[in-house]
Image (cartoon, rainbow, N blue to C red; front, top):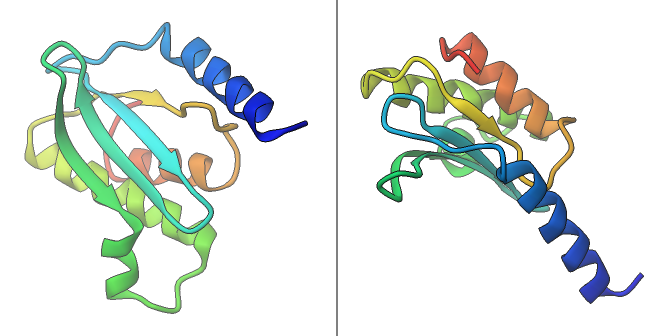
Length: 119
């Protein structure tokens, strides 16, 4: 499988997931981006096309440099939940994108739930 085919498959998977998900002001979309080094999440209002809040692993790793990658996702989830509650947001729609609900993506969801968000 060459890179173009893999990119097309990822894009199709992402579009299939996102076709059913629309965020608004009262219930924004919690979008997850994962790369080989970083994990980042943001709360997005699709109606006005704005990012309401953002959290990334750099904020977590600055506080605790010896944290494991799987625990970084959990802490990022708790951090975005804290920022969402400050904005008065209780419910979100979880958007995993083209990623499986597994590993760090799953830990982000668990951290957000523990932080008080309802997915």
